[in-house]
Length: 223
Image 1 (cartoon, helix red, strand yellow):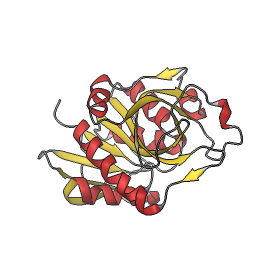
Image 2: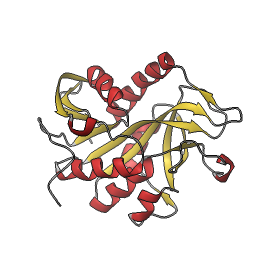
Image 3: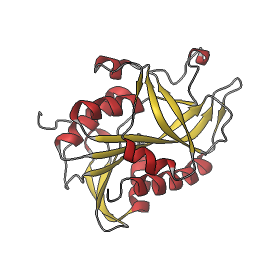
Image 4: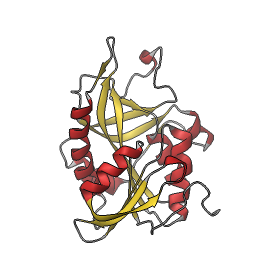
């Protein structure tokens, strides 16, 4: 595996990693779920942090940027640096009647994005069973998610059979499968795909982040 190019670590990468897309969310989660976080990376605006989680073991929170291509790069380099259990802590658009701010655990991810397909993915990608079991225990909505390349999709009716849509979960699972590492995805509903489209307010989104961090950090605990 090639040496990382886009991540320039200033601290060790833990075997357990939470993956928000938003760099600001990475900072907020680091302040929430680890003690004395040290900046892992700031190159290319991909903020990352490593610290000691509440269970006493190291935990890394690394932002991936927006969409499948950026996620695939970051996950590839994290695995090269030692990551072995990775959970996406992102946002999604609800395709069924789900409240804004509620959590969705992906029981499977439909690969409708270019990145995962370029990596050989097809159909529905399965998360790691152990991570899925622990995420599901939190009481969130569990169902298939579809990953696409379009945030502003002019025809969301093309996406039947999934409870929510995001941009990055399929890329994460595709890269994880290539390297034999465990990965899963838990998402907060930031939008309800209309019409009319509804968007969560910033304060409610930050409250949902707290629950995302709690659920995801618990899921990557000792196996």
